[in-house]
Structure formats: C-alpha cells, structure tokens
View 1 (cartoon, each protein chain N blue to C red):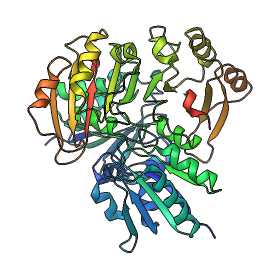
View 2 (spheres, helix red, strand yellow):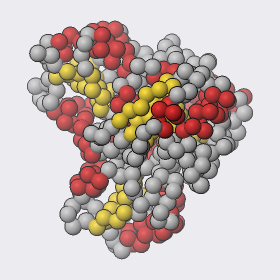
View 3 (tube, chains in turn green, yellow):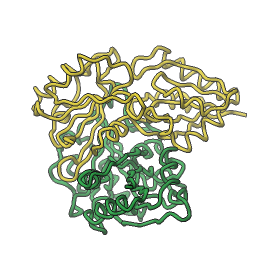
View 4 (spheres, rainbow over the protein chains, first blue to last red):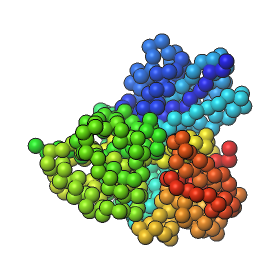
Length: 239
Length: 239
C-alpha cells in the first residue's frame, strides 16, 4: 500500500509559528525532507526515529537537483512511507511546489498541502505595521529578487512594484537590494519610501534595519546579513 | 499593573491552521475580541472562563465602530486583563490592525502580533497549485475588492492587476467579481486566464468554482456563496 506525501509550511522561523496541523503531520512522518530555510527547531517536533533528509535547497538556488527531490518523494511514498516535505514559510509562496506536486500526480499519488505562515507576515509582525492600510495600501505584493542565476529578475512589471499605493515584500532580496532600489526609483518610486530589511524575523536573533529606498542599501552594506532576510517597502509602512 | 493586548491571526478556517503560539496566547487570555471571520471552533481553544466578545467586524464593513473596538482594547488592558484580539487569517493583511495598534501605543501599551495563515495560502493549498512559479509567476499580489462603501475600489493600478506574469488573490471579491473581471479584461488581461472562487477554504465545506476571467462571474452567479470567499486569478494557476 502506498504512503503519502504532505507538503508542510514550517513557518518563518519561530518554531511556535508552525500550525497545529503541521505539528500533527510532523509527528506522524516516517521521513522528512527539508530545506535550509526550515528552522532547525521545527524538526524537533518529529519523532526521534523519523528519518531527516536535508535537501539543502536554498530558495531558487538548488544544491540538490529539483528533479532528484521529486523522484525521492515519489520513491519514498511508493515504498509506503508517510513523507513530510517541509518548506520554509508557506509551500505555495516561492517554494517551487509545482514541480514536486506534478511529479507526485504523474506517479498517481495524492499530495496534501498544509499552509504555513509566510515570511512577509512575520516581517510585518516584527515591524508592528500592517501590510495593508485602508485607502492608502489596498494592494500588497510579494516578489523574489533572486532568479535562477541569482541575479535580479529584469522582467518585472516595474510600474507595479513602484506603485506608491502598494506594499512590497521582497523575498531573498538582500544581495540585489542596491539594484532593486535604483530600479524602483527610476520607475517612479519616491526615494523617501520607507524600506526595511528584516533578518531572521520572529526569532530571538531578529534584526531590523530601517531606512528609505534611497538609503537602505548603504545602511545594509555596512552589516553582516547571514540569516534569511526579507525586505518590506511601502509608503504605508511609516511607523 | 497593566495587562497586554496580543493580536493573533486565527488562520483561514480550519482550527488546526492556528499556530502553536496562537494557541498559547488564546489559552492564556482573560478576554478575547473576535471578528465574524474568525472560525468559531478556534475559540474553543480558549479557557472556558475567558470572556468572548464578538465585535462583528466583517472585513471592511464594521458593525461595531472601529474606534469603539480600539477603545475597548485599551480599557481592558488598562484594567490588567490579558487580551487577545483574534482576527481571521493574518492580522496584518486586510485586518485594519494599524488603527488598533495606534490606539494601544497612544495609551502607552505594548502590542504583540502573532501572525497567522492568510486566506490566499489556504486557497492555493485547496487548488493544489503554487501562487508563484519559476520564470512565469515571480510576483503574487493580494487585493481587497471591497472598499469602505462596499464597492470595488476604482483607484487600483489596473495594469499591475492585469499583468499576466503575476498571480492575484482577491479578498472579499465575491460581490464585485463581475465588475472586477470586466475591468481586468479591459486592462489587457487574457479572458482565458484561469480564475477560481474558493469558498470556506481549508474547512470541510470548502468549495471551488473553477473557470476563467471571462466565465467565472456567470458560473458564480448561479451559486449561493455564503462563507468567506477568495478569488485566485493567474495564468500559472492552470492545474
């Protein structure tokens, strides 16, 4: 009899931001495949005898080939294992879930998805400012600033990103911040727009660098940013 | 001595999608103020003797005045109560958290925020399709289709919403769907863009109406939609 694969969102960092359902799935797993972005302490919720496999995929820059991960998920499920595929944040936001889901379906296996708290929400909680605001920020957008080759994607709708009535969360945006900020300003964004880099949001090591589109790159350049980092940009974020 | 107020995201519907931290905060609350959008069974995690106050705010259409809610939060905290302000989904997405946070800060009180799983993530899990996709959907945006007076906001960046390389989640979009779909198509969106209405995502009563920008309004018009409903629109959502 076949096992199953459950894609579980591990949340943004604080292990207490795992959902109750995620906890239940972890506790029932025979095997857990996890990424580098998964908080290590979330794995402590699994049974001691569960097999833990680090597939080391860091966002869009895989260290284990995506095809290998998908094939492993299928193989384990076909062996009858209860498999949890644990992803940082939410599986359906910048998690490359489609490739794994497609592989499971092609093999005739069901996949269940357990959503999680995505990084932008933990970033907003860290700032203490809502990502939306009545009248002034009716739209919130999440982008990744990290394409396949690690560079800033060039094919964005730049006007959409520069719109002063939207709040923007940039995932994996630390390295390309100087270019991103310059392009946003060139596209019409106010250089004085509040901008924040939030490192390790929701953890005891959480750190916020506050600035504007104009000066955040310089402020961040002087700091070591080692943990997962998120950018939040938007006129309505002024605390 | 003062109490405290914690804004807690109740998640999208399934009580098991509450976070472990949300559960801990609920269990320690003397008073809970909650909205209509909060899943009733989430309240069962609170102590039996905790006071439960339904402030009946349904998204952007308050039945209790927002100022009264803020004043009540301040009063209860000043009385030394541990107050949980429970909001559907995540507090920082279309939750009008800024007004309550500002009232607390003006009164010299701290506010803690516990993020939650926002509806769009549960909608993606229901569809089994990622909101982002490498190369083809690097941007995901959330909007509310419900302004102060209940009408569709007119001041959107329509080009940003019609962009075929983005995925759009529309909160409270059921009533204004026909006008929204028409405007998106007028703004350049492909009428064949996959579009879904997801009602009561993550609950046993979850229901999906699948269509396109062109035909979803008609498909939805023939159905009773009573629970919280979310729209998901995007070229990369094709299952």
